[in-house]
Length: 264
Length: 239
Image 1 (cartoon, helix red, strand yellow):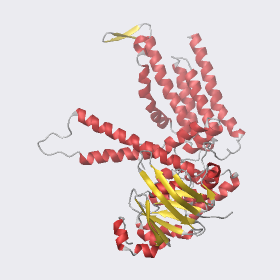
Image 2: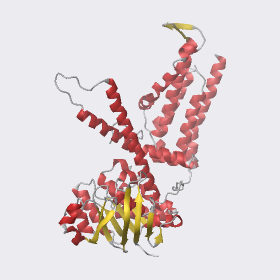
Image 3: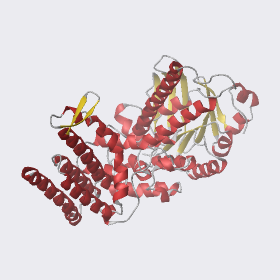
């Protein structure tokens, strides 16, 4: 088991785990859509949405703390919006160097951070309660193009293999990165960069060759350019009804957000 | 139509960079025969095996597999007849779940779902891996992966099994289990490329020595394995 990549999926038998993956996929997408449609600066509504997502999480045996912490992976990406703090026109609230931080800018940036965090939690509701194969099968039966689903499947299958190969390269480098007493070890930055570049290149070549062998293995078993899979089982509409509740509540919060904004 | 045979005549193949990989290779394997293909690394063994189901196409010469000439219109039938097990199971097991990998072949044969599921169950049972159907192959041991790789072709009910280094990378126990498994597969013609000379002597009645893209010797395993000078010349050893 590789420590670098951990499965998001947590085994369980809760109501959320048992929900059809197709229903869950649509539910998670609609919840994330609701979050992203919510306008900026409506703090009480974000709190409501967070409670809603946490409640669905609780139905899947996921604590709000665990969901929130796992969703923190998205936070570094929100830094892309950091420039808004300075560029949005409005009341200046602080100065950093020669730049002016505006209240409106700050509110917009914080809204983006919170909304990203909430949307990722909505996605995690799916990822943490559904085995990856079921998500792929669900995507396929929801008419996501076969090729796209296959590529994601291969990525998932070979990501671990690739990480193993990268680790063995790193280990081989570490094993030969010796030092003698009184002598500088490791060479110049330029030399180190070349070594690292060589490792990346070697990893790429290995992956490229592997892809050819995998393709040969697919051809050998009758692949002719069209991927075939099992027909999806019939959908249980009662479970779909169950999942409609949080989606409806999310829609209510979005409406609330617009009401709140127009009255504020 | 039960042919189970391999007929290769005057096969030549060059790598894309122009180097000769196989030169005038001819071999015939009779139905239900178990044949070993031995030779040093780079002798052309894997290249030869990839011709037997049309993944590679010969530059010259003719190939008939299961009674069918290797042509585009027979490619589907030939690939259904030949089960090719690759050396590295990570190349062969490309699905996210063991079950889907074993089902891949039968699904692409166009069988209906009930038949596919029956075949998957039989194939996993034959290699003793029924309990692993829902596992992801990444988390399995090398021996388990090899057995599942064999199940992925058994599920296609092939007439001919072609195995590339089936025991490479296995610990002694996994190796014994695998040899036991192969010995139990009596209905298939087998061509096994290997460096494992004990496997050759235990499993194969006939041995072909390939070196530098040429067939050097082809005869009863006992005769070949007792010719020390021949083995020495081609980087081989007695079991």
